Amino acid sequence: MQIARCKAAAGEMLNWEDIQKMKYSWNVACEVLRLVPPLQGTFREATTDFVFNGFSIPKGWKLYWSVPSTHKTEKYFPEPEKFDPSRFEGRGPAPYTFVPFGGGPRMCPGKEYARLEILVFMHNLVKRFKFDKLIHDEKIVVNPIAVPANGLPVRLFPHNA
Ligand code: HEM
Image (cartoon, rainbow, N blue to C red; front, side):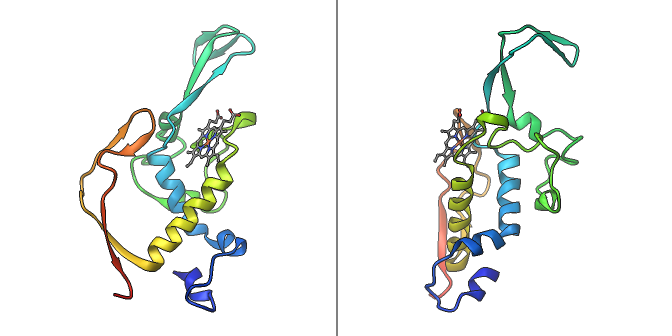
């Protein structure tokens, strides 16, 4: 709403500068991506023999790295089940602990596009409507992408109605 108040005309579109200012909204989106990451992980291949947590991993093995278990590690995210967007303030989480888009050379190339889409959607939803979930205890199913079990039905109430 802070961004909407800065716009000269009611229908004025968002621009790139506005997107860069939407830090709190992105912190909220990141906390959602931490708690319910859409993608659960992917595979990597060991390029050399190594030992991890006492397990010997031979070169050539396929390894599955898991997004949810990384995001729920108490050491990096105290009270991991708590919804707390302030975790992303300042320097935010340590490198490779917040990995909804993966990490390293194969990191999701659509990350910035996804950020843009999410922020534009959030802005327009909050600016135009109040909304209410129709199913308050709707479950998230993972098959293999995490989605609301019933498609997240909501009731919209336009601000200017
Ligand atoms: C919230 C939205 C998204 C999430 C959570 C997400 C997550 C991921 C993750 C975890 C990976 C694997 C990264 C790795 O192996 O390190 C990936 C790869 C990929 N993503 Fe996304 N993604 C999203 C949106 C998008 C969008 C919008 C596009 C395209 C417009 C896209 C295109 C790709 C492609 C092409 C790869 C494969 C990259 C490679 O293997 O080199 N993603 N994504």
